[in-house]
Amino acid sequence: QVQLVESGGGLVQAGGSLRLSCAASGRAFSTYAMGWFRQAPGKEREFVAAISWNGGSTYYADSVKGRFTISRDNAKNTLYLKMNNSKPEDTAVYYCAKARGSYSGSPPREYDYWGQGTQVTVSS
Image 1: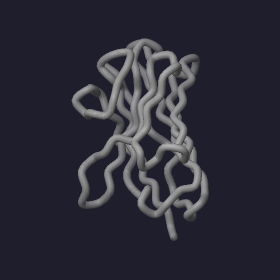
Image 2: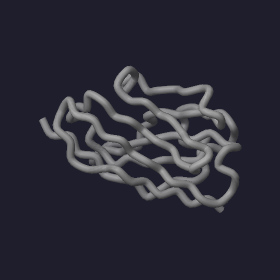
Image 3: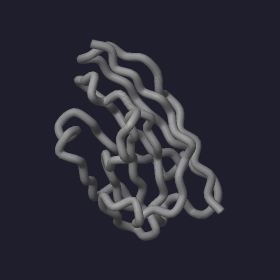
C-alpha cells in the first residue's frame, strides 16, 4: 500500500507562484515514477507533469511547459510541483499519483495510487 498526501494548495493571483508537495508513505518511494494531474470543475482529469524514479527525466503537458517544474526528494519521500506565472486556467484540484513503473507518461492508467487532492485557485 502507498499513501499520498498533497499540500500547499491555496489562492494565488495570476502571475504568482505556488509550490505543491506530495508526501508518500509505504513502499519504496525512490523506485517508482510520480506524476501530477489536475481536474477543473466540469472537466476531465488531465495530466500535468511526470518525473522518473531518480528525477533524471521529466515530462510536461504543453499547457504548463516553461511555467511549472516537477521535482522530487527521495530522501524525504516527497514530490513537488512549483507553479510559476500562474494563470486563471490553472485553477483546479491537483492530484499526485504513483506510477506503476520507474518511468511514466500522461495516461492515467500508468498510475495505480492517487492522493486526495489539493485545491489551487488562481485569481485574475
